Length: 379
View 1 (cartoon, rainbow, N blue to C red):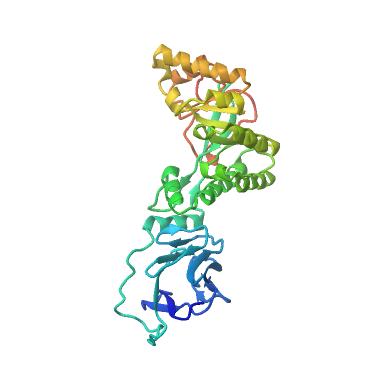
View 2 (view 1 turned 135 degrees about the vertical axis):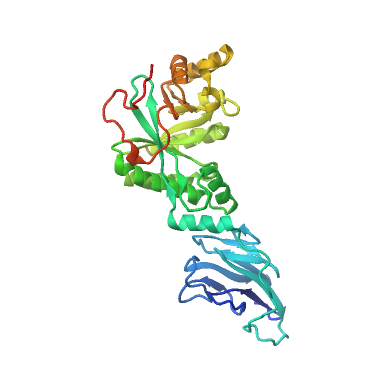
């Protein structure tokens, strides 16, 4: 530990309005809650052993200790030990500090309240604080949408489509995922949606086929994702889980073959989602065929009034998939005309507002018999 410089953190340590300076006088310097820490932030949402400061080659670094709500340096969440410099803004969850230093020859008492320091230059953004509160409260509402067999109208499965439920905060998943990405919490947020969706839905449904969306970040390092899925499957063995992989990720054929093989060995099924939203990847589909292929709404919307060339193209894609043994699903079906068009194109199943908007599980239940349980005409 260097002896020529005294490092310190400055900020509001507790509910007191006093602005305090806390010397970093030992290494490692542990931040957390309760006994055994050097900076006790009890009463906050930091973890018990949240982070530590330490010296390496005369440089001061901060390391997050797998905390629940993260450590941030200059508003960026860290995933590895990070070098610090004077003036850096550090957040332990939402607790904010500025890093300072002075010459060791300076004998001023560091613990004195400093009335002229002023407020810290910035705060962790309001939306980031709200997001952490959403995660703490698990403030999401699982919604479900039917996937309907076009031959007899029976429900073949449910897709989990959640919404945020924190007052005066975002509700749509795209907005919440944007904040989660900024905070490096995408995987944890997706895990919350999955776990709460399964826990809530299977209280009402019998033995459903559940379609779960896989986030691109989770598939970059699929081992933790696979572990979560296996744990969920063990808790809810009556459910058949279908993993929805965005079409844009189906690019690395060897990797996709390996992933599909791993998923199926664990008893999961695979769906490629949003087919046709970008480049229709027929080669990848042929080389590594999924169990289900969900056609993007851009191909399905107004198909009944579309030009003949477009209808023929969709029909060709459906025929190609069917010959590979893939179950085809039309997404975004909203009108009776579109129902007729997707049936004529040869789709096996469909999903969309025509059959029901996403809703809480108590608003409907899976039919245990064949036949039209959608309550709407298919012809």
